[in-house]
Image: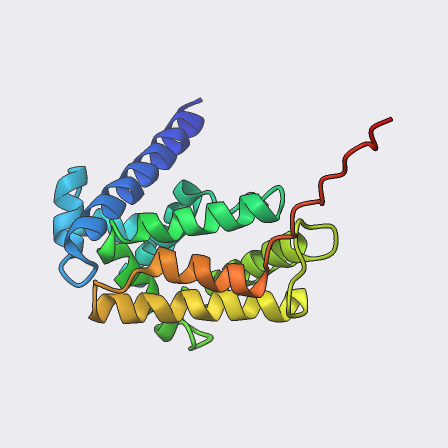
Length: 201
């Protein structure tokens, strides 16, 4: 019983650390979010953080996983309309947490190294995101994509990542509006069905 209780406490403390790190990084940016400051918010030592996560890079990778949980990126969207609205909502929310956007962009570059702790995270996340779009924008949706679903998914993903970089340099860039316009152009909604009237007798 003691082991089970200790394990549960460890899981709870790990979650507390991730939530605190999300808040600190979202407000202050990952460059200003030292292990010391995150540890102080949780009430542990920096050494205790490393006990739970191994390294700062591993902690930041898990912070991004936790962000995805909050954003609802893990569950598949129900249909094309839901995918469009949900993805735009996530982008809109990102404008409120610049520190997490900067962390994502920085780690996505560093994770090009197969040995980096975030490498597998980005591979898995990208695959899930593209699968979501392929399913949502493929046959049976509410419109007609101008590109093959797999190509469309990669274009949307690339545009989203690139817009984040532009927005970090120039916060006046309207990421949600630009992405909404792009998706609308690449996946135009089906025209409304023509109204028919019964001939009067």
